[in-house]
Length: 222
Image (tube, rainbow, N blue to C red; front, top):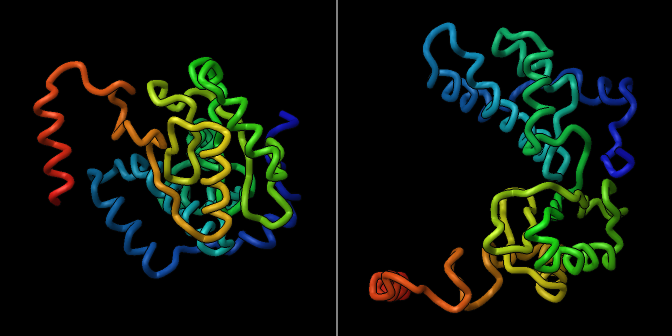
């Protein structure tokens, strides 16, 4: 728990976010999302609306965003559901941040496959840039979190930064990604191994080789 980002004082949170309301664009988006569900089942929209609210908070704070309690209360009221039900969803899924984070939320997988493939080197690249688990750097750019498996074991080690995955990492590639982000550039997402397009074997495909070749040729032409 010492590594968890710290939630600000409740009075401070309510002073800042107690009057939260959708922007005009997000209000329309919320209506569209709720309309996907049958009458009386609008509570099924809680996950996309929490995500929308987190993104609005992020846009207002120039960060990835988080979910202050008053914002969760707003979403719950929008869906006519008890606050605790919305809070249960927000605290269960790690896609929701329950405390402020930086512009880039760096989530390093430390589960066994990534550990065996060098996640300690990835973590070292983060720490050598002044990042500490559970903390945001003084410039507000990066928040570092160590997480459990995110399902990209074939391309271990990996990190998720905001909405993007970066895979096949080592110390140098992680440093390059962080440097690009700090400079306002968009690093290449997905596998960083130039020999790998998705999660195929590092030595190349072992079956359906002609189909794979044709697919790569098509993508080059496109």
